[in-house]
Image (cartoon, rainbow, N blue to C red):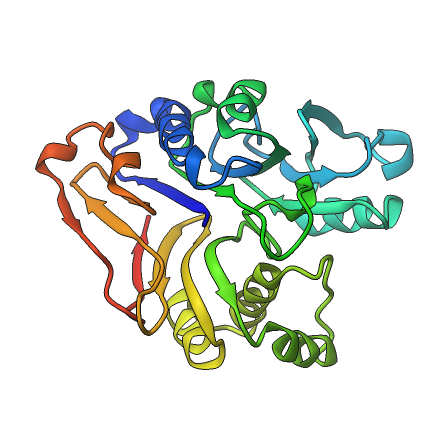
Length: 290
């Protein structure tokens, strides 16, 4: 049992409140997974300054000397954010080369991924998440079942540029699909089943699929019980397995679209009383674009 939350803001007047709203949503899901948590924030000028690339690193403290050019390194609990005015691929590759044993937990422009072990309420305070701004965020509270309780095992799994996936449930045939992806040259950082889903989606997006097609292909290929929320810089998508085993609720207004494992995580959003609220249908991909 884990908790998923996501918020896609349509009204720019709400951008300054993104972190405040995400904090309340994530903490409300704390009893669905209190051993660790993670969050991805799109558009915060402090976490990922405009005009820079950002790489989230776990397992070591990066330095400009090791990376080889001018970077800014900021620590948020167990996560180090490395930012620089260079293309994303340049920064990502330099961090990978300098720290081959560290985990890159997210990368791109306008995206910061933060992860940690502990209750979401403690982590959001350590991250100062309530002060974050932006147009979109996704988060996850984890009750570990498939791997150890470490920051590296937290969701979101952000394995493509500006891409994130959070997952409640489990994939039954992930080992087979992981072998197929490895044969196609895809690198893996863990033995976690969620990473296989994230790598599959990223692989299909890199091949030119849109997110709706990638998630439809995932539904056809993966066995198991799952609710997934997948995001990139400009989109936000939700899908459930064929029998909709894992809970999910979506709320939509003219100002925002939000998703959570339970309605109580949405109850504090502005204007929720007038929202269209529904439970997503099995294997139907719901997607919104900025």
